[in-house]
Image (cartoon, rainbow, N blue to C red; front, side, top):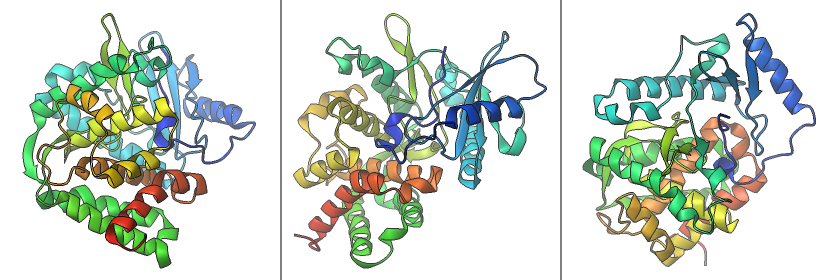
Length: 351
């Protein structure tokens, strides 16, 4: 079993820079050094094609008594990610409501290792994104178990809340992270576009009633493991963005959006911007969202509420994980700029 990457190709959607020729050797040597003295083990460094020098070095230890996934922080941002994921996994393990799905969640093993290294149990299965190319013309059917799981989790842990009441946690904290991580949007025309995003969110959240409960925060086909016959979810990992009181609906929409981006080859930002301009979720996405028990028009006065909130969490989580996102021309151009531009058009500051 090969444990999937900490940051899959869906996390950033476009390369941030080209990998160094010796990056793989450097990572492997570092991984061996971190576990020196642990006895003979088979070490597999998990590659990240989009960001080989992100804030984390992720590798797997294969041993006769079980496999472990280790996440070692390279910088302060990476250390914050491992500390946060450790706490989230502790909360998940202590929540009795999640007992039926305990086997799908990683468990932290031991205390923090060198410089905050996080060790957790490896989960069985294959990342859902790897099954998409071999889905016999119907990738949506393959993804159905991952979406149905969200309906179960929302029913077990969720409760309706007025989105406006939760705006400081669901919107404002994400906006602060995004602003801090994107220096070029702090002045001039770009600052006006960022302010238009804030107003668009306020309008979208007004009158909306969403579900507060366990939210993964980065739920996409690269973070869900599938296996068995019939196909079922065997694991969900990368919980550093998770929280027990998040807006549950964003997980389903993020998953569907990432799937559509993979199938069409189109950047996420353009897809969200089109939805904002149309003022409604595309018809093609609705049957998939229904698998997760989600009607994107239910409980919202503005049909773009869930798409915009999902996008906000995605980009804010990325800049938290690595400062390189906020300085990447490609990522900003394809993932951020189209959405902010559409918000500016809505606000009347751009034709």
